[in-house]
Image 1 (cartoon, one colour):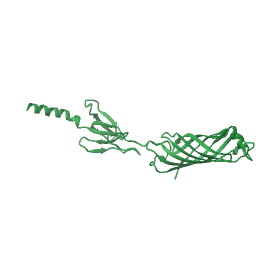
Image 2 (image 1 turned 60 degrees about the horizontal axis):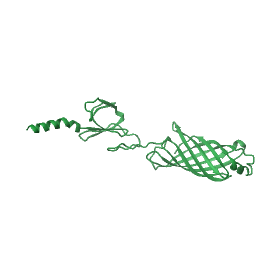
Image 3 (image 1 turned 90 degrees about the vertical axis):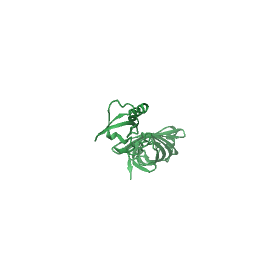
Image 4 (image 1 turned 45 degrees about the vertical axis):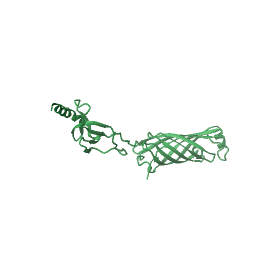
Length: 251
């Protein structure tokens, strides 16, 4: 009888440690707690591993769900767009790059477009080759560029990395009274933070080559401001271009 009473007393003293609630935050953290109070703005609890510790308060908007010891669940707020609730591990929110409108599902095509302007510098044999074409004899190596960017996002991975295809037609040399058209087709990758690089053909009246471009995008109020640096190698020389502009999502 005495041993039975001792067992019962031990059970009653340790039962609160087993009867625990699970609090899941918006960022996916799961805490073993004892929820004591839920107000319109806060959730108050104590940690089950420190029941004599301080009373902890957290904003209600930071809590996604509470799973009580009796098995019932209470959802207090919605997860951020793209986040997936999980059991026993943190959710994997989709962290979008800086490009607005790029938070749609992974394989839905997103189209953006806008003007581009900048300049190109011709070096060495590339300049001499251009001057050998009728009408370009007195060509200055520094050319202004004006054009348009057509961008299509082909896919987007859960970590925010996106695959891109861009077509950028340009007109150069207008400040010298010249008309030098060019067109660039780039296949590239944009990272979650907006850094991007691409590779593709570059066609002009002077030559056909491969262009390599790197850059990034800034955004404000739903508008992107891309900045890109491109190199087009050639026989005995190269072309270097710096382009910038703005674009937005196209319907």
